[in-house]
Amino acid sequence: MLDINPYNYQLMATTQMIKVNLQRDSLQTPWGFRLQGGADFRTPFIVNRVKNKKFISMKKKILQFLYRLLLVVQLMVIYIVVMLFLKSIKNQLV
Image 1 (tube, rainbow, N blue to C red):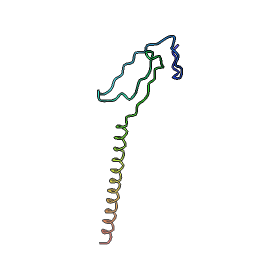
Image 2: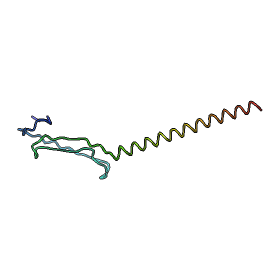
Image 3: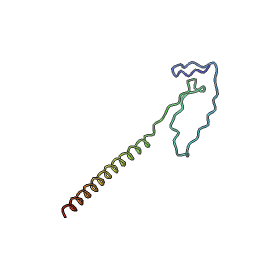
Image 4: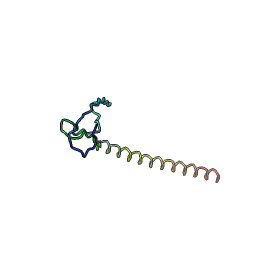
């Protein structure tokens, strides 16, 4: 029986070996998780997700840049529409 309850710190009577192969893009790419415990420590094996603050910060900066770019594009579209409108009015007056 495999005991996966993280609050049960009793030594398990049986163990189960699971082979896992992990791959990532490069050695510089963080895994994104932390391993704790296990049979050697007589505690449940726990996998925790790790948030990459640098990635989150970069993502926020990219979103801010794209938002500003969108505002500039909107202003350009408004300018073009106004210029076309003024040109059409000028052509009607002549």
